[in-house]
Image (cartoon, rainbow, N blue to C red):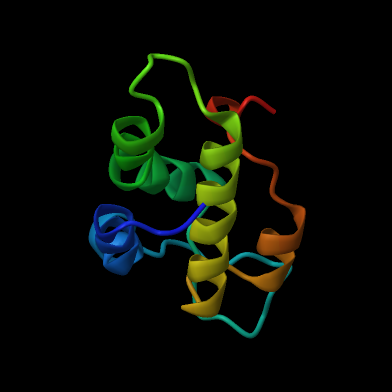
Length: 100
């Protein structure tokens, strides 16, 4: 699955525009603050999931593989940007919309 222009655009500014770091979590002292799992899922639901639905679910059937891959990519982006810790990245499960 390649990133289309719409999906790439959705990823580009998502973390900064939809979610805002809140409180520092005790499991990672290297970051001043991180977003919660709920905030990350909300950001993904608002920015990425609609693009996945438009591009991969035109038949009305959920594409759980595309959804899961997009959430994994989103979490990777959040971690690389310092919005979530490595612990969060390594321990979060996918949201229910991914069929997990």
